[in-house]
Image 1: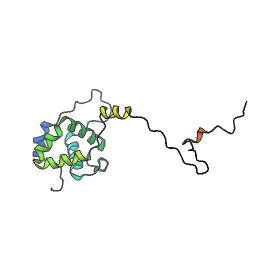
Image 2 (image 1 turned 120 degrees about the vertical axis):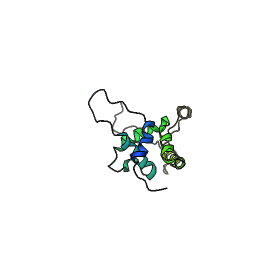
Image 3 (image 1 turned 60 degrees about the vertical axis):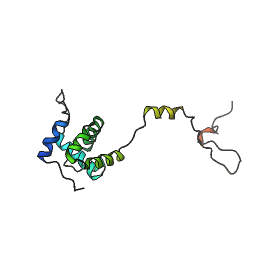
Image 4 (image 1 turned 135 degrees about the horizontal axis):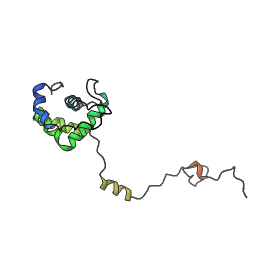
Length: 149
């Protein structure tokens, strides 16, 4: 692959209609929306370089913004269309590399199966002085400071 570069005006004209337009905030408080072209360049930089999101150069919007939009574009299928438009056959390799790096979250079905499993007891600590296991918690023994009534 060639070294990464930001997309040029001609490429932007091809992919801009594919990207969903974000609605401006109804209230004029908070930070203004980041430029979609800059965010796309940041997302492409991470995908192409293989670096972490937090290692993005400062010329792009914050990595949190780029990552948030990346997730939205990826889940809606927009990112795949953009990659096909920009890179053609090479987009398959970039997308598969990014998918391999993405964290996979447990589905609700996997969580329920894991919750149904029997809880595992804390391992007992072996005490060579006695043949009995010692409780794992130091607070399981009666306090020497309590007076017998």
